[in-house]
Length: 232
Image (tube, rainbow, N blue to C red; front, side, top):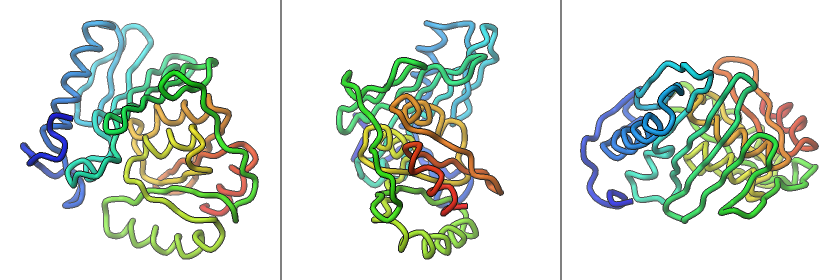
């Protein structure tokens, strides 16, 4: 937050000219990695900006220190910190923290999902034509072209589409009932790990989208089959 809406430092590019990283991403990841190493030295770590540790405990943390970097750099308050823990049984803990709004979405396997400590649930929407759904766009021009063509088919079939720019926040908002559904292709584990558990612990469901690149869809269990069919 100290760097938000201030001139960026250490600005660099990753996969394309539209995929930036800055010192805010790197320093947030370094802080999280240090804290986890101190508290859980035997756990593994997989983080977006390259931090990595092998697991000796059977547990691994999956971290996106700043999901929504483009929003962050442009001063848009739609970015978050995403941290998940996985073990031999799958996702065990998920937290998406939205510093700009002071909101923390949290879930633990079998214990439900909360927003700032209060339980939240997915919506009960059953029809696509009244569903508010979110998606995200890739960084390559070719993938964006495909996604634009897909929107021509999807938009007339739903209430409306939102494109927030942070997969972690989109999934958290599905969990909290602020969106009815979400889909996106080309995600990395740190984009979806925490958010996926939030949705499932809030009474929702998720499903992988086949094809290349693989994708993820999320909604309540009644709406999800129709959403998957539409975006597949």
